[in-house]
Length: 614
Image 1 (cartoon, rainbow, N blue to C red):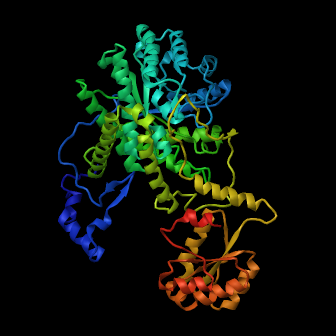
Image 2 (tube, rainbow, N blue to C red; image 1 turned 30 degrees about the horizontal axis):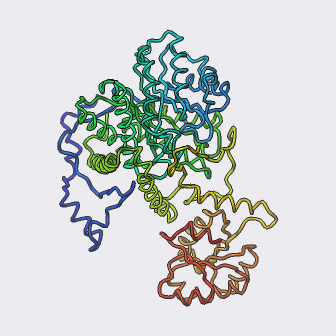
Image 3 (cartoon, one colour; image 1 turned 90 degrees about the vertical axis):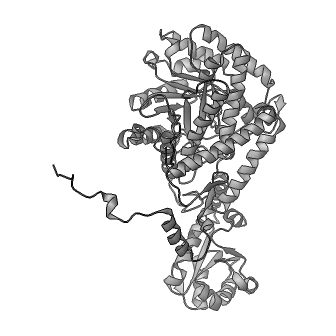
């Protein structure tokens, strides 16, 4: 063994730095611009500073009660209970250690799901060793009380002590109301019904989580992370009050409530979101006179971030999302297979979803440290920002009479819609890029297989109606462009092409030609042409021979000043029906437009609007 006792500490080899020195160097690099230039925002306006200090003081760290890693959920959503059972057994035999039962019509069904019947439930679980107390998370439809009774009966038939079974029955009345845009009865009536369905199980010794406060409808609709937290807390508060009104002691009632959140590829925000939820629920428990206890949080990788185009990139997104939820303290995680947005995932996609978690747990050892973000200035600051914003939203909700009243009035949906519109703007301008869709598209990608195509989402209409939370994916507007382009490619006219009219040497046009090729590929338009041209006649001849109907000028600003106008005229004379220019027009916009340039594309422009004009 090497003796290192007398070796100098590694950190002492380098001069120690402090914030003052960093600021000095940063200001020099900014060349007079203020340090605020390095600040950014994300996640609905959360501020991200360029530098954080380590948190000086210790803080309480609410965490999952069970030591070690989170539970790996097998997500079961096949409509055929027999095939669903085969999928479930295969998952459990190959690394999954929990079950996520998704029923048709539930918040997480995505158009699929087990039939909401006791017979389907019994068939799906027929060969599962329930006596081994395999943890179960349920996604129930609005009328799920009968399924709760059925599942309890199946477990009791295996002679399992109901007080010890790790089960989240998954009743989610307010989440269902928000998704469906209403309910058949008002909230007091619905709450009383749920409490009444729970009481017989309590009498038989059940001590499970009967209710889930699910934030996914808000995340799927485009709400900010603080909106999702506030919605989940508002739902939990409403059920806490309902159970108390039914005669359940608060100490017991709070143990009957679990949470479910979405986790996406924004590592910092997602990790902080789970920490913020736990901290805020602990605050609510304290306000109720209870000693805070560890709450159960189930995570599912975000539907909003999934794509139909270049779906392989979804593997990277779900990996980061799982990493974030796991380190943020999720008790159990369900990973959407990478083809979920296309249709019902096959065995291969399900295996990759399962192994994503297993690799992070068993090879990366992510479950060995409790709350690894604790004390890190950036994560602590984000957690506090989320706590403050979510608490403000929750207070506004409570001031209006609670979550149900906020939904009936439409105030909460309006707030979410504003956040969704802001995010849609960032997506369309690629400030929030989507790899494989709005950036680096592959217009000739090979198709992937699914068991069944995804159906369109349809909300159930109800007697008491209000604006619904409508799920959607960020990539959908771009995918519509690609679908239209592919449909045209299948006709005799063929796929639209744009000729990259490169002017001058490679050093002049290379960067903008690459930008333009990527830009048009986002809309499914094929970019052709590689060489640079020194004269307009050769440029026009190459365009005419390319088979393209459009052209995009690509070069440096200096060459544009010399040749852009004449090149545009030559292209127009050669038959270009639309002429674009890669770069900002500057002072020559009027002259360039007069020469035939119709649109200018550059970093930060509205990509979606520009491509829609095609």
